[in-house]
Length: 331
Image (cartoon, rainbow, N blue to C red; front, side, top):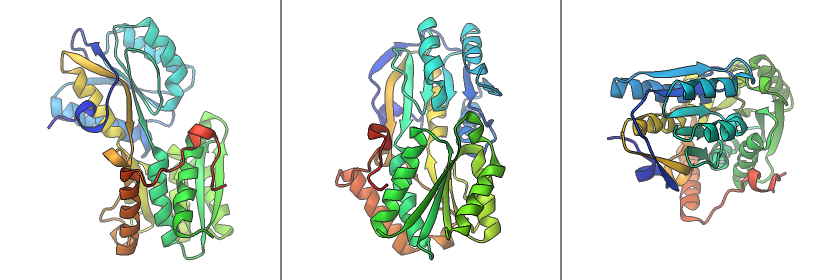
């Protein structure tokens, strides 16, 4: 069955006519398509599209900030349609390029670009982080857990706030140590620094550490495994990286967003644009459970997360979104 956001996961506010079927293109954010996290999930969606459709697609991995606009313009000039950008950092350049190529459809993943020819796919990461926060607090034996973010921006603070709120919903006294890797884009691909921060948190008593740091997170999970504590992955299911020491992963359906965009681009008719918001209620974010972490998640933990999911879906629980106020009530 073809996956379509309009029918299954969200409502788009406008329609743009796709005048002719053209090869899709995707631009990955800094950190590369094999970061085992956000970019790799996007890449997996593109691969799945190619396998399912038999069609080719073009891709580009950024090496510097200066390449964002260059890559977008190059793909648009060559007639690629749709063009998918993976990551919130594309927002400002996409606002400009989308205006210059009004007949090209663009897809912005993880940010909102208010243009008639752009589909913006955003995730409610605070909801998924709330769920893994519950699991972290229940798994912790020390009563201290950690969080390592990538670039220190409100978007990543959204993850940390949801995590803290989830943890304190089951243990109001839990101590949450929080560190950010840096203030530049280099913070997304520094596993050495991620490992150092994790080791420091472990020395302060943390026995579960959640990362939202892209490629830097590889160092977080490695340090957790080396120390015999639990790590929590993000964006992709990272349980397999260190079986038995990754408690769970907060997953986002980035791969589905890419697959849907490329598939919709083949339709030859109307390509839906506007904002698509994905959270717990429509399966856009969740926690991962598989053979690699099944022994770590008890029935009691599953029940606690299921109760929280039901409360979010019913509206009885509204997880605070740091992006709306740039403050966290748990701080």
